[in-house]
Length: 316
Image (cartoon, rainbow, N blue to C red; front, side, top):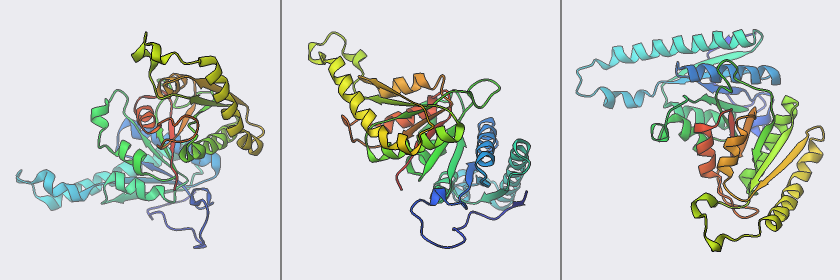
């Protein structure tokens, strides 16, 4: 067990790697801000790091560049205020470190209080981290999240970004499958690979969810032009989905896979699956594959409103 305050550095060998997120030196990074949501994220990150034999890096961004404009005209002395923010940040990471050690006493933990903007800080760490984890406050609407750290990191991070939330009043996790949204894009393919790895790590099943249309059929009820041969289309899409998953299933033969194909509205179906899943995995954005399903808005909706942790996988 060791603690330090050094930021994340490059791989010790200094050698290029195809996937920096899987290097043995890659740690789980969690961003904190002193909220209950951040505490949940710390517990989730600590459990994951301990289970995988990885270090945990706890980071807090002060965003000092924004401070002068925030206090301008209020007659506040800037220097003492900055010192107060730094002291508070130190207290926050110390408390988070204690919380993480309560989860896993043998966990190797580093901490960091940075002057940087929190979103920029986490995006930077995401380039080399095994995972980046942050929390979300339940009941906060979309407008409150616009421009927030949450959506900025989900949109611009690299590798895998996990938004942790409680599955119930007292348990941050539940027994259930890993559920992946499959859209056939390059980002979606990366999400499928990550989902298989997560299911294998958790010794649980995988549910692959694919919706072959962007349409919300409920908005067009009664219109003849949406008389789509549902059974034929579903069968064709199921065949494509099975083919796409076959290679991954060969790599992870112990993972049981269930495929679910729907005619429309991936967001609604994934949200429903979040009631019983222990993790939802989606790609970051992009149209591709199958019938060109758009997952950008789906991932944004899920990280804000899903009922279990959500992993958004990016292409580097």
